Length: 314
Image (tube, rainbow, N blue to C red; front, side, top):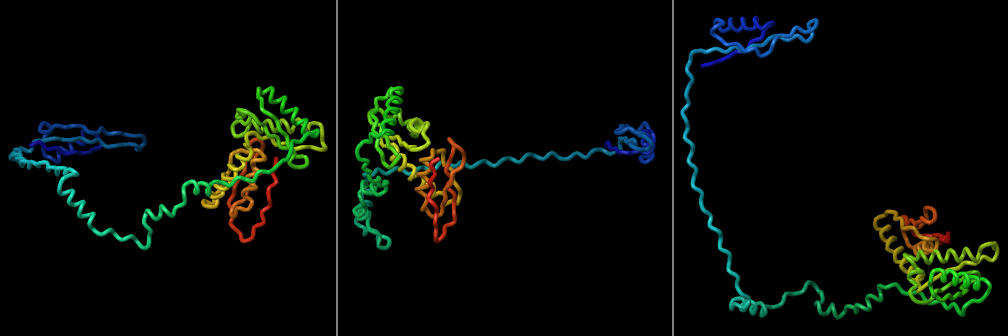
């Protein structure tokens, strides 16, 4: 039987001689395999001894192990698929008999004094009435009286007619004086959507140009003009009020500030006014035109609150 030993020495010959001395054999009776050669290193640093493997035959026969027979696999049991229950038709006699027995049973008692579904439906208000309750109540219509024909109103009328002609619009211009120095202009006609624009941007531009035109060069007796078409201003105001209440509810619920989209001065004023008495929130404006925004901030509710009314128009 072949065996071997691993021996180290300063040199390969020294390691081989050491192995022969241990085995008490001659060089011809063994085979030598050099595993690692000796390294001298530098000044003793990095030196390594030689390592050899000496194989020899000890003269013993190898033991032959009996071959084990592989175990015969056990036969697998066949699993027969379960037969699915046959579907019973709804009109079968046993099914009809069960339905009749259920119908003859006493009805289950309701929990507590909870009314039946039919009673709840009768007591419920009609859908139209519920929608009317949830819908915002329209503001009362302010009677502006007859059209105004003073000097400022004529300037407004002349400027807007010329502007609408360049815009290929046949809208009619009506000017009213709501307060001293404040004019409301209504554009009436068909297909006024182009004059309103997306979110009233075109209408705001017409209003800004009108204010600039009639107040140019006059420091005194300055007038403020509001231009409207198809009652857009009132609809937009109601939409902003609903938005303000919705955002205020989120701010008080999550206690996080919310910044709204950019708005003009009038729309920001609507938001400030709608939330001036809302408990738990405060409003402020941030940024510069035309990207000035309203910030709805959370405020810990107090027993007495004297919030100043915002008068922001710029």
